[in-house]
Image 1 (tube, rainbow, N blue to C red):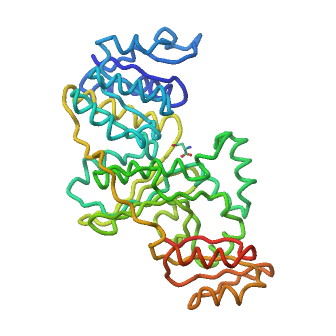
Image 2: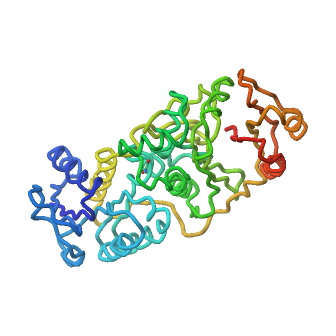
Image 3: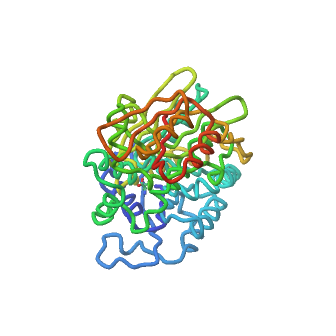
Length: 402
Ligand code: HSE
């Protein structure tokens, strides 16, 4: 029998218990051991809950119980979750987590501690919720040099952008409605400013490179400036707007990593990923493109991924599952030097100024009297931004093309 402790009995933690209970016989068979939830750590009590008797408030009860083999860290944050994870691994207990913030910040250190203590730190649920993406990168695509990963990695922003496109609504209205329905957090900053997607692409790109991609060094821009008007132009030109998290090898030692809204052609596979769904588009040098799609958030999808890690740990008791993610920092490219084309929306009154600033581009009109659209030619980001900012307030928005 394998004893499990669940840290945090919130949405994902209670989902972990539910998945193990619902799929009991099947999961036990796949784990090659009977899985038993022995403890649930939470500050609260849960009177009337079927697992009420398993609830403990002191982590030391779990830490000092040698019969606990696997810990599921579903607390979130980088404070207590970090300390508990470290302590559990140092005791040789494997840890399975959905905590993307912790994995992005301390992944290589925690993996090293796990290796030194013949146990595992697994984090399938930290990116893409229930979508298998960590295991494909670690196991299935090991014959590949992964050259690029592009993902829709945040369900909240994808829901907002999908609704803005479908209903012609503005960002603030859709956000408010998403909050009222409980889809978006009360404090939605980490989602709408791109920080959540940034942590997730930091994890994926670290696995892609085998080196550490520091999330704080990833260029990150959110979706708060995207308007309903931008979607009108995007549609006319055959595009949609998606918040993409991208990592791309530029050469042997430099990688581009960024999170930003992009215009992508309507026939791109990622353009078809709508609402709260996530997808990860991976380009390997042998396989070419492959895409992983599914529910990127939510109780049971995320819990399913945590439990898949529990099964993996159970199958590999006493053995270390190889994961290439060194502490050495990967070299990230200066985004200012990267060439792209840009969509610009500006007041009609400055059309001539825009065309002079970005010669060789192409104007786009959609029958609106207040503004017009313009696609620049390819140019370096730093040159584009200098010219864009110099145009002043009559230039209303800009979006990069994929
Ligand atoms: N806030 C995240 C999202 C939850 O909207 O995708 C899953 O990581």
